[in-house]
Length: 347
Image (cartoon, rainbow, N blue to C red; front, top):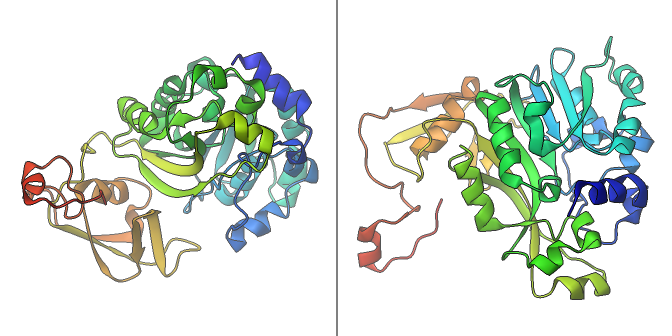
């Protein structure tokens, strides 16, 4: 699908989230109270032009420099602007001028609403497949986010490679998107309504994982996921027999991450010091680390905590001196596990 078709769909056809024909590009109803309070201060015109499919508000953002790929009218940009505070900055990129016009019209409004002396956001018109053409400095962002937009990109690999280039070492891409249970047929991919509704441009989930790794993001971590129901009989028939889900992933720019979860006898202790997470810290959907508890981790998880902005919030036990094989429960391709007849799923 061409860029101009997407721009027309989001700039002209859709005037608010009520115009969507499916529930694919909609956030889950549940969100933390601190985020609800922030969104209550976001301008109504910005809120009504929101088409995201997840929550892209990771914790520990004060002072961070964040880039939002496909920012639209700016809902997430402004929410993140409140979270990074006056010492941080949020940059939005979008290819649809009508959406950017709405976002830019409310910069002063949000600076005042959040109690800032001046705006801490900026918006760029451009394509997320061509981030190198926007004049953004490589290695200058702590976090890159995106909300139900990568599926609309014509070259997903270019998006991830561009994001990797713009992240600082130890930075992360934290984003939500729609994924299919199999590769989308070409005829469906050319359906402009299904594409605009965030469905027929979706990647097959395993293709996404391989593209992410090829772009430099080893060991992608899924944070949340939920199945999507179309609730539109006509469109549901057009996508059959495919199934779709919305998932949030975090991808870390850490050069030493290994392809599998390897065991080095390491552990961490969470101090309970991340704001809004006093009792436990959730790195992903299978690493929820309780405060004060010794929590064994693989080498990759160790690096995701020790070599990132989260380091100050943990105590670290062990090192990389001794390797003990695959981390228990992950399995990988070990022939020893295959011979035993056991089946394991990756941690």
